[in-house]
Length: 71
Image 1 (cartoon, rainbow, N blue to C red):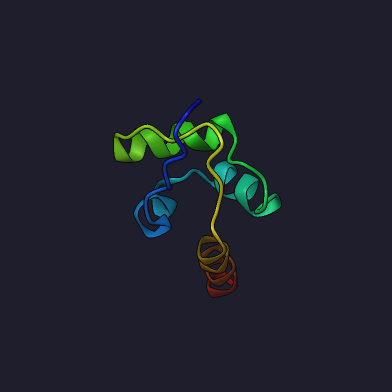
Image 2 (cartoon, helix red, strand yellow):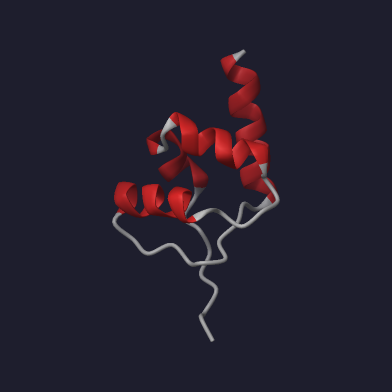
């Protein structure tokens, strides 16, 4: 069974996501991150992102704040 490792802090990888990856995360904040989003995080940080990685409630608040700050 694959050990569930937490995602690094969202502040470390969110700025490096493409626009399409950000839209994907915003569109389904409760879902596990897609292969595409995990791959972008892995490239940005040089770490492995678990298959079932997902946003925490703090991560979701960060995304919500980022959306509102951009408006």
